[in-house]
Each structure stands twice: as structure tokens, then as C-alpha cells.
Amino acid sequence: AATGAELYVGHGTVWVNGDNGYIAMQVSGLEVLPGGGLTDSGMHLLIVEDDVGFVDEIKQVIEDLQVDVNCFFAKSRDEAYSAIDEKHLDYVILDLKIPTKNEALDEEPEHGLSVFTRSRSALPGVPILVLTGSSAENFIPIMLNEQQQVDIWSQGQTFGTVDFLKKIDFEKLPEKIQVVYQAIDSLSEVEVDRGTVALSLAEQRILRIFAKKFGGVFCKIIQLGGGLSGAKVLRVKVTDTSGALIHNAVAKIGSMAEIQDEARRFDIHVSRLRPEATPRKLATIEFGGGALAGVFYGLADGYDKSVLDVLQDAPQFSDKVVEAIKNTTRQWGEGVPSTRRNISEIRRRLLSDRTYEKLKGGYDLSFLRRMENREYQVRWPCVHGDLHVYNSLISDFDSAVLIDYGDVEYGPASLDPLTLELSLIFHPETILDASWPTIRQARLWGDLDAYLEDCPYEVYVRSCRRWAEEVSAGKREILVVAYSYLLRQLKYEDTNKELALALLDGVMKSFEKT
Image (cartoon, rainbow, N blue to C red):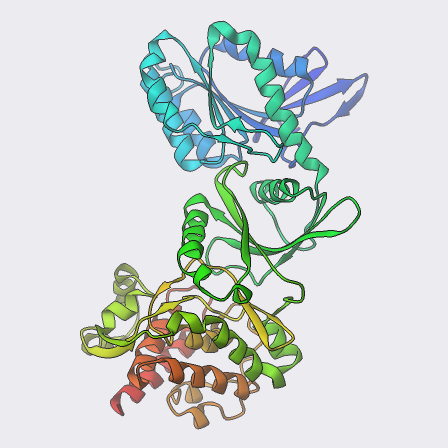
């Protein structure tokens, strides 16, 4: 227990009240057998209840069940808010009639309803058991609108995401807690080999739920380059009891909003591509991971190299790799005519107005005033939108699939090839050293021969630029997209700002010649 923690002992159970809430631990003689604590084996339970006597009864239920439970207790609306915002939770037991603050005398059902709403918003994947009384009956229809029947923990049976229990039926509570505990505990049957990949408890939950859904017992995890957003992109290999591969998958784990948006983009845009050009969607896991959700895509065998891997191991094949990626996206651009758009509209595809205004205040970007309102000819098909050096997987150098679909939408045709080119410089895990491009070369970006002097990956850069020229409406589109991409690099803390500004200077010099 943490230093200074409070200890409560009763009926073979020690309740430790430390910084991470109450942890129930079973005691046998002088030996302490720790419960789930903050590992991924126990249940993480929030109990919102201001009646101390009723809390003691719930504690007694948990002690009698002898289960691994990490309990957080909240006696008011605001204390419950804090737990919801700060803790990983698997299950919430919520009394509606609570005060706004601890020791306040304003108990009303609407405060419990506020906690319900906060939980559904912040932790959409967490089921809630609502403790009801006659004064709360009016709120039940509102909460019923949030109810779904879902196989949350891949048990083969559905569970209500919103459930109700009248306090007079308290004897039914042990069964409800036991069912949830057993479902969560069974996830530990899936072994997760995460190697060096750091995984939160919520991320581990989602991976185990996915593996269990398909009968898997072993899950090997490899990070795919690290997301540039807060989401995590992983390769997931799931095997069964015999060691046979069930799924070779790519997973993206992020907020519920991110994952739902990506799944929508996949259904609308990515599914239009040739079947062999993109993985098939296997599952979307929206429950069981607290604040997080995950979407999983199946890969064929052999797609185990990123573009950066190829550049590092076999740069002589980089032109074939770029050609393979171009062919993968070809259907998006077929038959799409050019159109007239101003630069600000194109720039917004990569950088919001709000961030743009902040950058203007932080750098000498006087050239922007004469840029943003100009109009140029642009082709505007569907594009990947974030096709950096880790967002395509390669097989045999001549076959590619796209991954990570969070930015798939309509945009300038040259965005994907230019992102592929420039991410070689700006991705945090780039293999480039400081020898290329120099600041002088960056200012010559529009003069490809001068820019590529002593470039260790000349074939790759030329292939990307050639792809951009093939699909764009002209050179000015390429320059506008490069301008927008480089502006966006200025917002990231870990990018080389001097190099980005020098490349921007090179783009502006090229504008003067067109």
C-alpha cells in the first residue's frame, strides 16, 4: 500500500485506500494475496453513493464475492466527475439522488443524471448500473435512450450498456457485479506479448476483447511507426490454442469519436478501392475500453514493411514502392476533373484557420498576405490525407496497402505523393541525418536537381515528385500543397523549424517563376 494509506479489514478482505482508490485484497493467514489493483486482470469499479451505510453494504457484497476489484467511491456529483475524468473504469454503479459536493445538503436525482451524462460522454464504452428510487422515475426514459445490448467483453452473450436496479432489490446486486467481474476476468485468458510497446490498461482491454472475439488466446503487438495524432496504430497477430494464426491485423486505438469517424471514412471512401489495395475491416470495438475504442483491419500475409523500412534496407526498390502506392490509390482519382480553388481552401485541408493565425503571430510569414486569396487550378479527388512513410505497408516491393484512415477525404490530388516525399524529412522516426537537405538545398526545393544533390534517397524523392506531377492539375497545385504541408510542420514542437522555413522559402521562389 502507498505510504500513509488507510487500511480497512473485514471478513478476510483488506481495503486499501491509497492514491488509486480502494483496492480489495484477500488475506489468508499472514500472507497477503494482492487483487487486480491497477493491472488489467481486476475490475475497476466506480460507486457513486452518498449514503455511508449503503456504501458499507456494497463493500460487504464485494468482500463476500472474493473478487479482484479496484473500487473508487464518490459521494457527490463533483467527486464522481473527477473519477470519470481521471480513472480507467470498467463499470459504474450510480445512485441518482446525490449532492453536488461532498457534505452538501442538496441531494437531487438530476445531479445523478448529470453524472450519467458525463460518464456516457467521457467513457462511452463503460456500462452503468443505475440505482433508482421513486424520485428518479422521471429520468429513466432519458437513460433508456442510451441503452444498447452489446457483447461487451466477447463472452458470446449481450450485456446492457445501461441497467437499472431499485434499492429495494439490493439482493440482486451481487449477481450483477459477479457477471461483470467474470467477463472482465476472463479477458486475462488472452496473453498479450507487447514487446517494447507501451500500452495503457484501456488499450490492453480492447486488444484482448478483439482477440477473444475470434477465439484467440495469444496476441503479439508491434507498433507501426507511432501515430502523429493521439491514436495508436498497431500490428496485431492473434493465434489460437494450437498456435495457428487467426488474424494478422492492423489496429487503430483512439477516442470513440476518432474511431467512429475513421470507420465511417473507411466505409464511404476506402471501400471504393480495389479489394487488394486495402485491408478489410474486421471489427470495431466500442465497449470495454473505457474512454477508448478500436478498429481492426485484416492484412494478407507478407505486408510487413513500411516505406521507411524499404528505404533503409533496399533503397534501390523505392521507385517500385512508390509506383505500388500510386496504383493502390489510382481509383480515387480516375475521371476527376480539375477545378478552381483559392489557396486558403486548400490550406484548410491540412491546417485550420485558428492554427494558421497563431503561426502568423509566431513567425515572420509576411509572404502569407499575398498568398491566401489567390485562386489556382486543382484536381480534387478523394485522398488518403496523411500518407506518411509509415501509413502504407509493402509486400515484395511491388504491392502496397494503405492503413490509418482518419484523414481520408476529398482534397488536392498531389497531397498524397507530396506527403510521402516530405514526411521522409519531417516524420519523428525518419532515418535521415542532418547532412541532407541542407538549408541552402531546402531553399532550392523547386529546382529538383539542385535540391537532390548528395541526397541518399534521390530515386525515392524523384518518384514521389513524378507522381505528384502526374496527378496534379499543374505545377501551381504542387506548390500550394507543399506550402500548406510545410506550414503545418511549424505547429509541431519536434520539427526542425529552420528547415521548414527554408523549404517554404524554396516554394515561394518557385511561385515567382510560375
